[in-house]
Length: 389
Ligand code: NZQ
Ligand code: ZN
Image 1: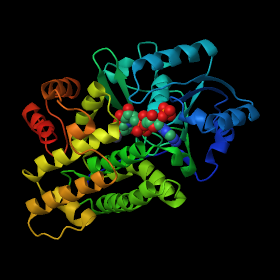
Image 2 (image 1 turned 45 degrees about the horizontal axis):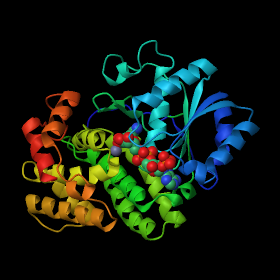
Image 3 (image 1 turned 135 degrees about the vertical axis):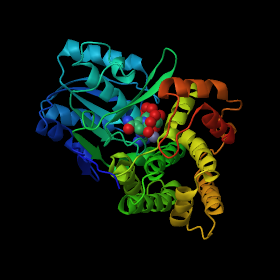
């Protein structure tokens, strides 16, 4: 187990009616002039935005709104938000929605106090030192951005989707988590969220660092619970307990606890970000296609941890590592299929993926060698994309 530092300063308010604390939590954090950032309409339709606006008015918070953020958010709305905040003299952000609204808010939070172009942080030309405070009302358990220090934005010019990782600067001050809000999710979004949170755990589980038994067991326990609760939430969308378990799992999957003490991998995420940048697919659905392909590649070269996954998460009973690994991958794919997720490019709606383009962009954005479990070069990532086809 490696040395580590771990700080997760986000205050979580979890349960029915959590969004009703939006005003009080903002005030408690000194956030009294706010840009509220939200998505394409679901929060308006459900009445959530009306409730949040009312709470902000009650608390005497001055606010403006930036709505219409689309999935796989781009730099355009970030630039608009930076302008709005500077012009209006606003000092904090409230994201209402999922990863796309939250990440847009985070990028604005970085950009407002920075003199240069906010993309400098994503292009590696500047290191994030400070950001305006961000609060969250979460409506979809998936990206885990409500507890993470990460932010993923696509630069429209050239379709560069980049994940910026900070330890603490971008962690939200608070996150209000009401599982009832997730009952209106379309089944495909519930399922994609489940694939995404599982991937956040697996990116940390597949590590070359030995002897992380506690972190391994945390990851395995979470994965087993997600698989069990997912089936319930998919068959009964209004099952509060299933929705609650899934929602908390989504946060724990990505707030860093499952990575403590070890090197992480993140190849599947990097490979998926190219797919969602180029083809506009849902991130979690893309992961359901890429991750099993990555695991299959690893099962043939370094099966140890993949076999452990099969045995401990899917109860595979096979003494041979390679076949235990392959059996575990088969069961993972069967699970994905059972909740309606795609496990091939074609099922994802990408009939003829331009694998050369994906590989070229991947290594242009992420470097010649990527990954933590095994280091991979272009020939390797091409093989993985091909396995997913
Ligand atoms: O836009 P609206 O109308 O709100 O609809 C959204 C959107 O179409 C809908 N939705 C959300 N909550 C709903 C709802 N529909 C009905 N009822 C509700 N309660 O769901 C759709 C997806 O929303 P989005 O915010 O895009 O989902 P998600 O949370 O999966 O975020 C995806 C983005 O986050 C990035 C992804 O790459 C992608 O860009 N990620 C961010 C991470 C981070 N910051 O730590 C890590 C992740 O690995 C990921 O890369
Ligand atoms: Zn993800």
